[in-house]
Amino acid sequence: MSRRNKKTKKVAEKETDSDKPYRPGVKVFCLWKEDAERLCEIVDERVDPETQKEEYYVHYVDFNKRLDEWVTADRFTNTEITDDLLGSDKNGNSDTKGRGRTRQQRRKTDSLHTSDAKDELHKEHEEITKVKNINTIELGKYEVDTWYYAPYPDNFSDCSKLYMCDFCLKYMKKKRTLMRHKEKCKLRHPPGNEIYRKDDISMFEVDGKTTKIYCQNLCLLAKLFLDHKTLYYDVEPFLFYVLTEYYDDGHHIVGYFSKEKNSLDDYNLACILVLPPHQRKGFGKFLISFSYELSKKEGKVGTPEKPLSDLGLLSFRSYWTEVLLKVLQENEQLSIRDISSRTSIKTEDIVSTLQALHLIKYYKGSHIISVSPKVVEEHQKNLGNKHRTREIDPALLKWQPPPSTPEKLKYR
Image (cartoon, rainbow, N blue to C red; front, side, top):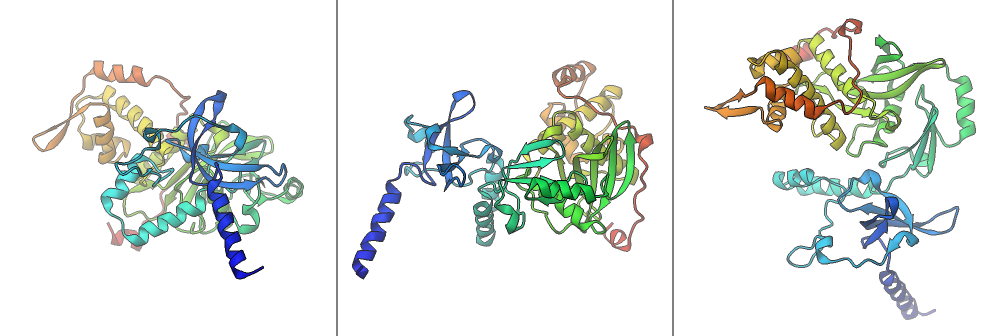
């Protein structure tokens, strides 16, 4: 074949690809739950190795990336897409920049005028993580659909399903490998000190320096359900507080939070996760409350590391609201500083929560709490008992803060 004919063939192939109705970058309507139509953007395409059918990885516009999924073309509809649905600007250009990021994150990025280097890194991260590499995991008695991409080693990242030991969190490709591993694995609880136990609930403190492999496995597991988590392998500067439920065969992981050993920004929590099978059972607030109990033991105020995930922000705002309303119900005359010293909640978080509740005013250069018993009762009624609350008994917390190191003293 001549060079000219080869060139003509390549051009023809490109023209054929561009003529395909469904390809990455195209927006279409897709049948979703209960046959509802949702506007989505095609992110990637593949041929399923088992069914040999062509599939498309779609992101549902204005929805979180955790809902992204592989679908077949028979779920696409012929509903016409208008310019207002595409979000076109004045020049008719479709706004697809920042897919999967919240409006708040996009505004923050714009306002900070990040450098080209950071923009390139973000684009590279978005490109790498745009498609989930693991679809499901088997952890103990649960089979769980994942939400996001996680940077597992290359020889595991092409597995549709991973099998995990729910004691040591080691991950495997095959069920039979997991069964053989369970016969040899002697671990029956997280590899750290049990610092709290009430009924069947326990908390273990695990040091990222002394149990590096376990903590790395924990971070990789967490990344499957946290979009913006970036800590995977550098675990040595962190302590991990792992929440477990006890059954006859041992302590099974429910969730965890991590905390910097030496935080210069008063962070009492770096990352938090409750595994999907255990969500909406009060465990999220339990972990948040536990982080503040540690801060009280240390005699410090604390705040979570920012930015928080969408679910993290909801959990913290709900926790702060409950705590502040309870304190104000007991004593309406407290100042913001008094509330902070009682609860170990940082003043900035107290102010933002009270502002959201319309319980604070700015007068002559300072914030003043404006509240009455009736208003507090009304807010508590609105709050209701949406989720089960798990109270922490401080008397059962067997933990002392580590002694101050020269590095800590240096920055006080």
